[in-house]
Image (tube, rainbow, N blue to C red; front, side, top):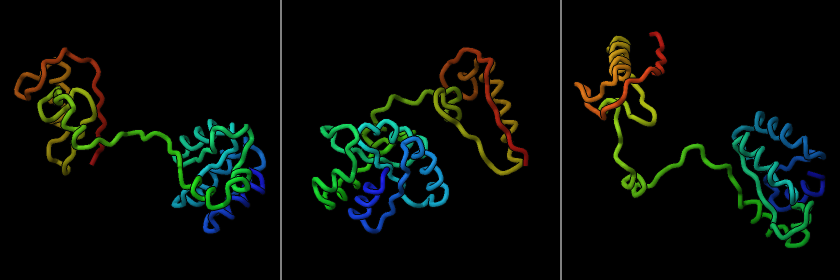
Length: 181
């Protein structure tokens, strides 16, 4: 980002800060430092036309945002060009159309949840066949004993025994992380 681009962004929104990097390869370094020093602030990367893939890659790695200039503009077209062509109010509107990396986890609506296939269990109501299960409770409540029983049930191909659940083939892999105390 050159000085003109920082100035254009500042003119569009005087309450925001804009930083000049002078070299595209320095954008990630500067963005990381800004995020480290000002983590509660929203970090937005404003690349020139043609720099969107790099901006998206940086935004994904830092979990921040980027903006994109109109696709019909030439390579190297900047926010300064946009502000001069369309005005700073239009630039402010453009900078509010943030692009975000895809969410790691997708939130589902109640309709989507109801449309999901029924949950399949390794051990009915305790250990899902797919997904993540967690076992927690106060110290001394039998979590370790229950976890060993679950491991033995899964390893032996149980599931239709006392725990219920789907019939499963014996498994030789089971992960268990226990915390003492």
